[in-house]
Length: 158
Length: 158
DNA sequence: TATTGTTATACTCTATAACTATA
DNA sequence: TATAGTTATAGAGTATAACAATA
Image 1 (tube, each protein chain N blue to C red):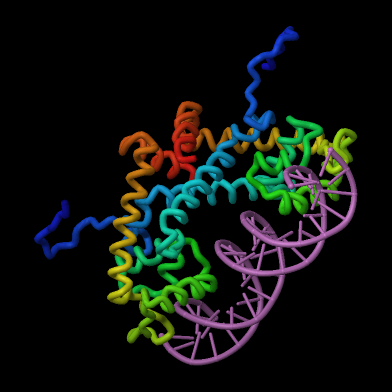
Image 2 (tube, rainbow over the protein chains, first blue to last red):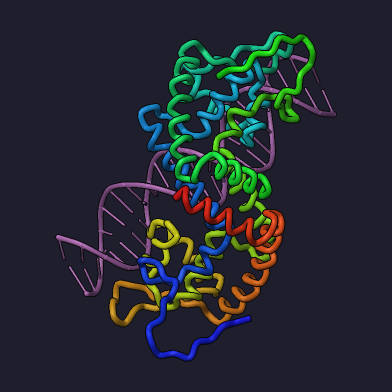
């Protein structure tokens, strides 16, 4: 089903500011998903600039706080991070005094992850800031119902 | 508003297969967006395995096809790719015989980008394959209306 | 034998600076 | 002076292999 127009006049082409035709590209779900995700992550980074906190680091802190004493492998796996790469991430959080690696008594191969007192305090501040960011994002979406709708749709893509 | 339950019995905790509490993490829009985007891109890579085509390369081919003769900078900018990094990308497509860099007559600094005959044929096949992937994705979302809903919501996040 | 944490390594993606040739 | 393409380079993120200690 292709359309053809017999006209010499200037018609309303779907063009961007650059004058390029981008419909084919921007019509793809993956493309739009990528742009939106990049935008949201950039906003996170800007919002958490003074915290020097990346999205993955924030997720790790939240996950340890909700699951104290878990092994590195367990936390890493939930987030889809290879355990080899998780070593560097958790090492950085430990160097900042936010996380402790406690040798496990039951399994001496494993490190039990805990937040330090400083880590707990830091996360509390970060979470309240994150709530503000999340509120702003929900507002842009059009409210809690729109947020729920988006999350439901995203889940179908996994 | 916190809830408390006076019970010793096992209650239905929102836990994953791993037994970890992940509600706080997975409630974040950015987190869910990232997971969905990674999943969609991984499906793209698997689907285009025999084409040896990455999402960015596909977008470039489509954009050149819809806008023949444009400069590298123009195509790169639309996709949010730095012109320095775009050099390698377009070089790879040129080496594969899909794209031509034609020195511009009007501006001898610039390269006008065109698809070769092979590039046009390759893209036609890739686009029909992409349409199949997109159809599958739309089906998973729940149909064209759900797709439109998702794209509208994603646009509000940019 | 298998798993945990670790190191080493490599590949992709992204970002900046600086160069050249043109405009 | 500014722009187009390029090179070099550095930083993230991600992937695999292999090792020591332990299960």
